[in-house]
Image (cartoon, rainbow, N blue to C red; front, side, top):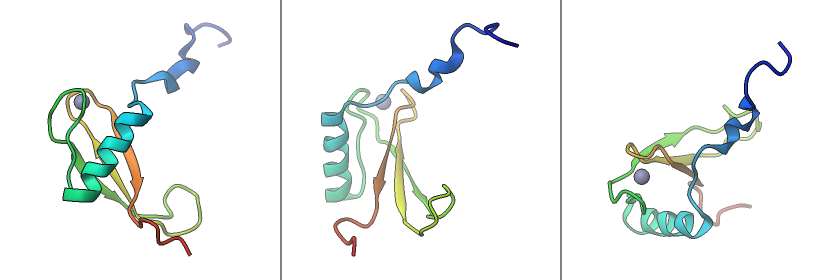
Length: 84
Ligand SMILES: [Zn+2]
């Protein structure tokens, strides 16, 4: 069905944090193991993501932080500075 749906290609246009916000979240998470959404002020849920499931091929642990209110999320590498 060509061109029937109204520009749904812009699905990647969902709300995201800005780079400064991401840095603040990352800093908070690295410091105290949790982070607060800079927009909502609610504590973000954290979820560990096992490596290899994203087709990358190498096992890399990541942490996914999700705000349950605004649904914004951020993904950080768990191994900080240990890239060999
Ligand atoms: Zn939020």
